[in-house]
Length: 458
Image (cartoon, rainbow, N blue to C red; front, side, top):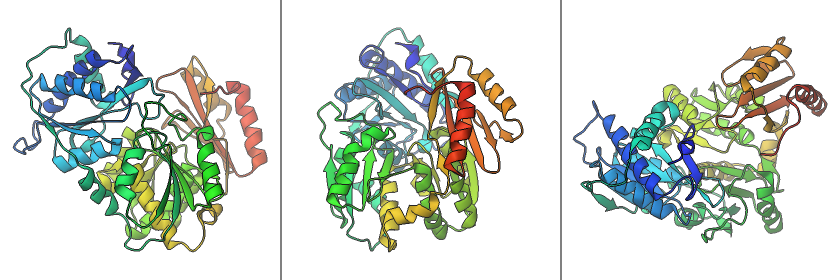
């Protein structure tokens, strides 16, 4: 097994060279051993507390990897509830709905078809990352010499589709407009789940790339602007109210307005602030530190408590729990909800957007227009070998600003700011710059590039 498949937040690699059924068995064995070892002090008497949930996405090798993973879990006596082909947020629902000690989703999310991986969650769907158990799971898995064992755990198969649908639709307002929505499923899990969940709620859904044939018409990553071309054209042609593009495992989405213009996820977070704070006054709202100044301004305007957090779902979810924040938004398209076990959900985000549009008297482009009051670079990547030294150099060059090191370095001035943070897995620095005018953005970006060099495609 290639140890490089263990990343900061999950396990991911090329199938079958880096990640195959033998590796899946070992990871299943290690994951069950680790998660069950954490049960001391919890309610061991609960029927499913010693069990784990396993689901998988639509990739051609996901089912066989899930079966091997389950066999590895069974080999240490763990009972497994197999919930079949699902979107990733459904594993978070299943863990809480069934009361298991954790679960694993077999998916490579937005990566190309030849990749696969495992997203591991613990009790109450708390994320298992490098600092919360993934190191220990890696240690156990890479030390195993064989993929054999006594199959003394059980396997049950559950279909949670109806219960999951009811959970998502409980957030839908009783009165909604007959909106027209174009959805690009990216040949991913939204292609299965959208018809099951949204088929009878009173909106018209036009479907793009809902088929599962083992290939993607475009890379299942909606953050890449070129992957939205088909969606934008369909929205304009069909005169739809909005367009939504999901990633491969349907935990993230990107939205375009009725004119086919992309709505940044920080702008969408800002749009949702008054909606949520009207439901839960004075609550905290969590946002990642790459987000526009407009997010903090909107939270304060509506008497909320801004909680700025470093990038990554494990950090966002942890802060959401600690602050009991009503919701959180990340620039990557993840949106997190207190009433969804502090976890993210693409489908619940869609429900809340439907509610917001149903209450509005103007199209979404008009709703977000006043929120587009700054100018942003978008995330740029720079190839840098000594990342720490370069971040120190940036902090030194811009030392006259307000500096913090929550994630890389953030430097703020009265009319512009930037964040530069290291990639967890590659020799890259990731830069975001925002300014009050286009001219100032261009000027400061030029100055930063004189230090970092030219950005690279990524």
